[in-house]
Image (tube, rainbow, N blue to C red):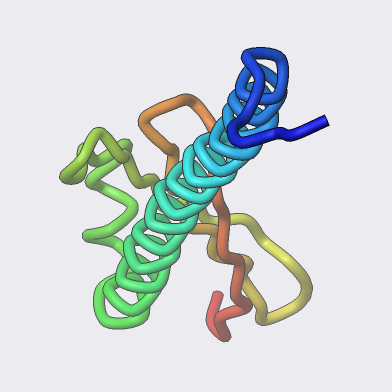
Length: 112
């Protein structure tokens, strides 16, 4: 038997295999893009929380008076104060994500 070209069946099998490979790559790129967006969101939340903690170190009463503070990108930040032990206060900075999640940083401060 002399075969000079590909049969229609061989072409169809090759196209199916190629489409499966391309579909896998598209799903991989989509998952990577979602991961990058999630990492950017978390990074921004950490920046807002650390910034809030630094501002609380400088002027805690002013940060407490702000209440829930809207931030850029749909984020919101709130600083709360709780007694921890004799001479210690626990300051919590909570950053809420635009999608409803949250991130919190807590530190102990000296004082009444």
